[in-house]
Amino acid sequence: NRVREAIHSAFLYHATQAGMDMGIVNAGQLELYEDIPKDLLEHVEDIIFNRRDDATERMVEFAENVKGPGKQRVIDLSWREACVEERLAHSLVHGIIDFIDEDTQEAFQKLGRPIDVIEGPLMDGMRIVGDLFGAGKMFLPQVVKSARSMKKAVAYLEPYLEAEHVEGSSRGKILMATVK
Image (cartoon, rainbow, N blue to C red; front, side, top):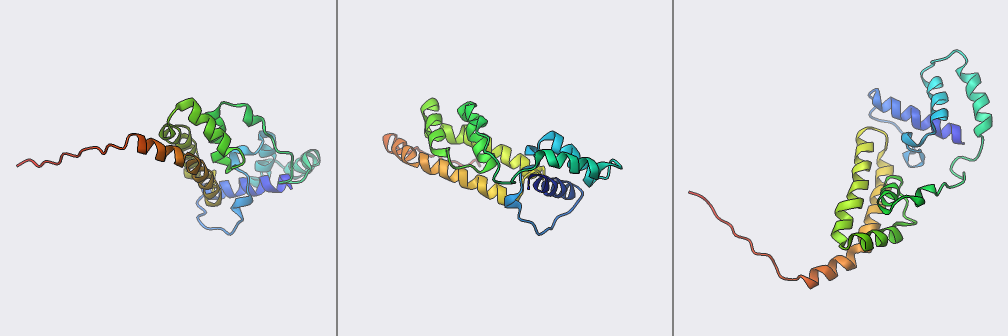
C-alpha cells in the first residue's frame, strides 16, 4: 500500500546514506524518495528515527486518511502541462515511455536539429537521473528504466540523424602534426 511503499523507500534511502551498500529489495517498485509527499514523509521518518513517543499512533491515524492501493493509485498527468523540456526530463527521471515519441518530436520541431534534442533536454534529464543516483535517491533498476526511456527517444530521432548526416555528407579533414 501507499504507506508501506513510502516506508520502504525512505528506509532504504536513509540506510544507504548511513553506509548500507548491499540489500535485497525490489527497487524497481520503490517510489523515488523525492516523490514521497512531505506530510507522509514526516510521519514515516518519525517512525524510522523514533523521533516521537506517539509516532506509531500518529502514523496509524494518518494512514487511515491516505489508504489506497499502492501502485494502482490514480496517475497524475499534471506534469504534461509543463514545457517540452521539463516533460522529457520527467519522463526520463520516472522511466515513462508513453509520451516519449510525441515529446521528442515536439522538441525536434522546436530545436530544429536532432542532435540539439539529444544534447539539450535529453541529456539534461539524464543529468538529473545521474544526480539522483549519485545522491542515493534513485536506485539501479530505476536508472535502467530511465535509460530505456532515453534509448526510445534516441531511436525516434535516429532517422533524422541519418538524414542530416546524408545531407552534409562531406567528411571533415584531420590535420595531424608533431612538434620536434
